[in-house]
Length: 271
Ligand SMILES: [Zn+2]
Image 1 (cartoon, rainbow, N blue to C red):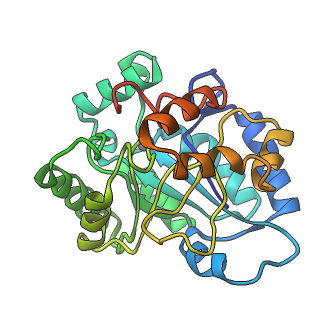
Image 2: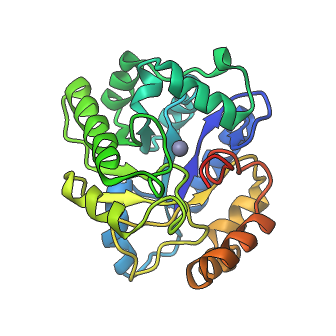
């Protein structure tokens, strides 16, 4: 099971988790689950499980509040997480800030990306850093040349700034067949990533490919909701998305959208 958070801040936003709720989540997860690094998910999905569910924690986009609000809680609980970074957001690219401002429904000035210094600190503290493109486009609609640029440039800049190999990638918006295709998956492999994650509402199955690992989006879910996702009681939506034709899965996923998790993972812009 892989979870994806986006931002952790006090104000209510789509895809946001409030700091008090985030702390409750991490407390509950450390008590009730075996938290593992994302890199171990593909192999462990094939191995027999222990008594507690295995969970990897990820964050998408690269907001400064990940450093300010999430990192201290993760460190307090000895939890390693993987942060997928939109490099244009970190570099203060105006167009990227404008895109996030539209997706989040907030003012552009309110969109604050992590700084390179914060990312270096997070990495030094034991967090893992992955790529999430330069500009956060829908790769399902992008041509192969532009896709290659988004993949290569984000990977190279992260490696250059952080001084480590960046091996994991998260597809922006993340829904299989809508936001990335088999061609995209091939390009991600060619770029030198060794693992890629989607947003697909179910747990990891032994047959899942390492370039299409499903993740559950988590926002302001209470502990009961989090527990339902962890224990597989919410898997029906994800399995249905996988087998249904595109037009139908689109309809179903919208009607089953969990409160507050839409804009960054299933936006109008992305479709
Ligand atoms: Zn994203």
